[in-house]
Amino acid sequence: MQTRNTVILLISLLIAIAGAAMYAFAKRAGEPIPYYVMGMLAYGLVFVGYTAIDSAARNYKKRYRGK
Image (cartoon, rainbow, N blue to C red; front, side):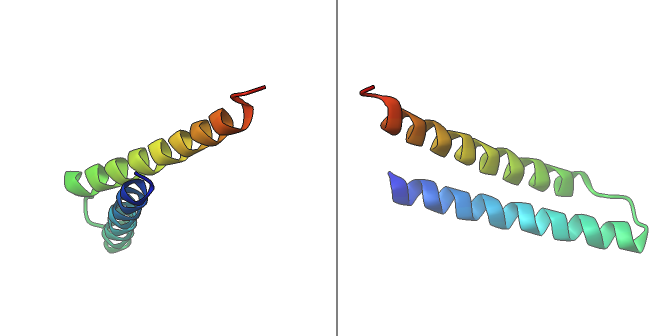
């Protein structure tokens, strides 16, 4: 389970980085930003945020479950 979450996190980070790079290139060139770039950014950041929140919740649960 941990390996699967790590792979999903890495893929989401790559998508977010690619979206951010495409956003920066389009912004620098003065061109309109394509919708798929915004979708890539949203997808990547949502899953990175989900993974961070899920990880924090699991750590909290492990630490304080028996107390």
